[in-house]
Image (cartoon, rainbow, N blue to C red; front, top):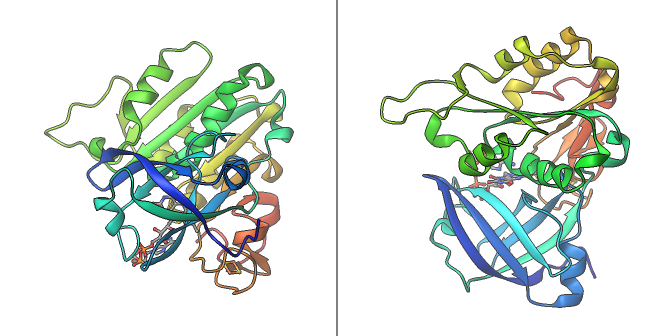
Length: 280
Ligand SMILES: Cc1cc2nc3c(=O)[nH]c(=O)nc-3n(C[C@H](O)[C@H](O)[C@H](O)COP(=O)(O)OP(=O)(O)OC[C@H]3O[C@@H](n4cnc5c(N)ncnc54)[C@H](O)[C@@H]3O)c2cc1C
Ligand code: FES
């Protein structure tokens, strides 16, 4: 398969998650190509194209699938993502990928895992969460901290509330502000995401943290984790940069001397240390 060329896929499912965010299920039309595009590590991304409109990078949001089914969670905000608001099952799209490096699952073996998602960062972290739950015995304690700006912006809320009933995962939710019309789910705090770290007890020598959220929150999360005692090597975060080619050719996604599309988008904080503006 040529990574420069999109393969044809069909939208087979559309589920509205919030007012501006939709979960799409796509199925690759060609089974041979499907095996490649739908096999990925959580944290990797694909390039999604709308015929005649354009192409954008989007994180995988579900589990890898041999049948070529792909879940993508998309916020409608611009040239390519807004027309997708009107997409319906049967619509044609193009996909190419997977691209980049995802979360290092092999190094998570027997470790306690702390997932921290902010806003749309829940999309790639849902993929990671589902993969971790699928092989639950491989890891130690599993904790998810997830923050959104308000109750109506929490993605996958019902799914997370169901998971919170399990005894082998701890889930804490937070919203930046209270909205008078929506009652919060039990256990959801009105707090900024980094504040959830303050009450956290973790075994620093065996915990790895996986972060995905808006860039503005990273410095606070990273310094909070380091204050608790987590080393730079144990903190992995997904950087989002404006991308064009996704192939390391155009330089649009440069972070210092690193290219987000092929060196990342998931980096250890140790690798980003000293690169000016890496977390901005
Ligand atoms: C590795 C990676 C994974 C991503 N995963 C997802 C995902 O799972 N779901 C999702 O909805 N989006 C994701 N994005 C962001 C998505 O690619 C952008 O929202 C999309 O490119 C916007 O395209 P557009 O043509 O609709 O908007 P445009 O018309 O190009 O822009 C609309 C507005 O969005 C801003 N914008 C455009 N691209 C980005 C970007 N990359 N980051 C921040 N702001 C941007 C522009 O500055 C502008 O203000 C990801 C981006 C990257 C790099
Ligand atoms: S998107 Fe072109 S080099 Fe990364």
